[in-house]
Image 1 (cartoon, rainbow over the protein chains, first blue to last red):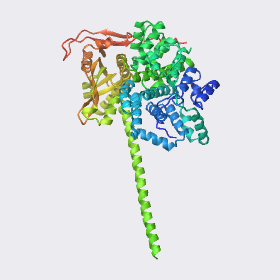
Image 2: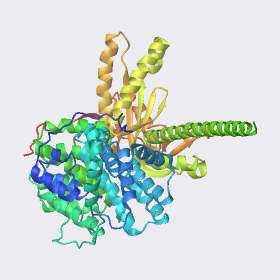
Image 3: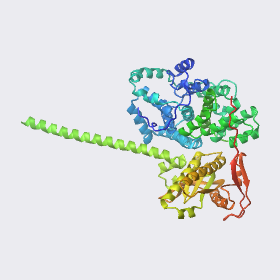
Length: 363
Length: 271
């Protein structure tokens, strides 16, 4: 299937795949079929699980129509030039029974703006976030309301856009190979297996059900998570954040610093103070934190933290070539799991802070 | 006989109708293909324009047709402005053949633009041999002053390399003067109905231009204002210059020459 992103430059993959049977069986339980990228993320379990648990297709959306969610994922992946995720969404649509011609027609309709007003408003919101940043999208929230979306739907639109941004970065930065996915619909055995794949996916695609948010309070992103309280999205976000901070490959302080840099770059004025408080509890005093965030540098930071802060900063602007080049430079200076965790933290920070900056009313 | 005529007529009519339908179908297909191609071109153009002006401005241009009343709403922003000028351009232009001069100038523009883009800046315009660049104009950038000064240092290094190239070809060496200031202003599309560009209007642009001129008096290549200095990382080594009066300003301007950025430790201590 020809892809609009085939011209996008894609470096050779920066990480090695590692089969993990437990992870694959977890993915099979949650999604029906494990994504081909799963094995690349296996060395950092929280990241692999986040990519499964936070996927909006499988039991997270209570209000938003799934077809609009699919279009949002397609548009954001296209805007971000993530070859892997874009090929992934097209493959899902194909597996659901859409012909290649029909998928191309949907894409042309998106480009032509020949859409129902509600869909058009949702797509415009996603495009504004991708092109102009979350502050621009926040300004477009009113247009969603005018188009008839409820508050619950608007929250889910922001979630789908932010989650796709997270997933796009997690796949783009290490340049996960996309060729296999792009070629699948053209392979004879895949065409024969299509009805079976569709049935497997269908069995795992379901609407979200009201889910209470349980567990002890925690600081970073608490306001954001509470915005989704009652929805399964809140539980998925909370579990991911807690597991990410507990992961052993990078220090908790280093990860919080990376989150803080992204929050500052995206001007998420609700997330930033929460991360700042968590950092102060880690022993970083306020002047050092101010200096670190003002210049992505401070004498109190160690060389590794400086390196990772600069990398986190680079991930705020989405240019695949540049992202992959900075990641290549970083890879030689970290162990494999550290490198992968750094990619995961920066990607997640971008997703969360974008949702925060789009959805939360700033003080 | 009658039946033959009737059947012949029906067949002829059916053939004509079939032909007309086929022709219409071909026409529809061609129009659809053209429409799709135009939509894809427009989408690509819109994406390319997002690199030249903020997405919101591009979106308004597309939906409103760029009419001044609705399409160019200006935004108040704090931006870091940079003015770069080629030292000794007039003398060089008199000595070199026009084709050689254009080649040298293009090499200079390319290297300067690369340094600006690599540090999240945006070239606003080329003014003769000068370049106006903005940092933090297209998208919010809380690190805009550090970025602008790093871009200036990258320009210095690029000019050094370019001069080595020019020397090998027996061409004259070039030098630049760079002025950087930061301040509030208005960003938006300016110009006539026929020709517009995204620009930042504010005192910072004028002061950056004045500072660039001052760099020749102080015999340095990069000068920043006090407004930039207070925002800069302590890792930059700066030297204060004597206060100097400049055209259009009541008070003498205190500027700082940028010497270098102190290197940080190279080895990571992670893990």
